[in-house]
Amino acid sequence: MRAREGSSMNRALISVWNKEGVEQFARSLWEAGVQIISSGGTAMFLSKASIPVIPVEDVTGFPEMLDGRVKTLHPKIHGAILARRANPSDMETVKVHGIVPIDVVAVNLYPFVRMLEDGVVGDDLLEYIDIGGPTLLRAAAKNYKDVLVVCDPADYDEVAQHVAAGGNVDMKLRQRLATKVFDVISDYDRSIASWLASAQPS
Figure 1: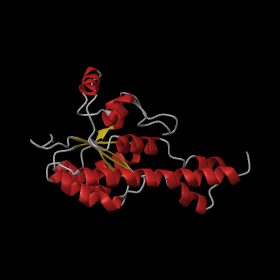
Figure 2 (figure 1 turned 90 degrees about the horizontal axis):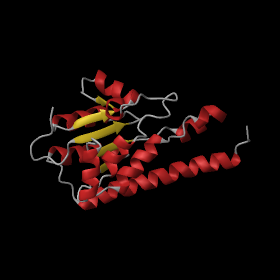
Figure 3 (figure 1 turned 180 degrees about the vertical axis):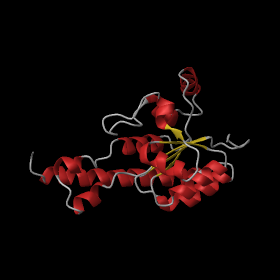
């Protein structure tokens, strides 16, 4: 399905650990004509729900590697998020490199705190330190004037409604969603730093 004529939202990247509400959210975007890019478990989850997805590796030309540690860390993803739509140089650069802008980023993070509370320790806990997720969120939040960023399933309905209405989202909502991202990442990193400071070296 192609983006609806007149819509300012053409592509979304969805990569979530917490799948709550994501099926309906992705379906709403797809029904509004938005292409869905996804990775790993999220791509499989949405595909099983009969929602067409473009695998991240089809965009980047690289497979997932290092046991999933590297999936979305690629210029064809981050260039697509960070390109400033009103900047002719940015838009020429992405065009030259075959990069298609991404307009919506929906990501939530590996559950580091929950795993810590559940007693996971050492190298096993290290695997729950999210790298790609915060990077995607920070990029999208930095470019909030052009990219809708969603880190909380509680915001799915509101964002989906705006996309379905044509994607014209006021700057107040964009800024609020971006602010939430930096709050979430700040808390996440603080929890990791606190654990590292108190953990026995191994």
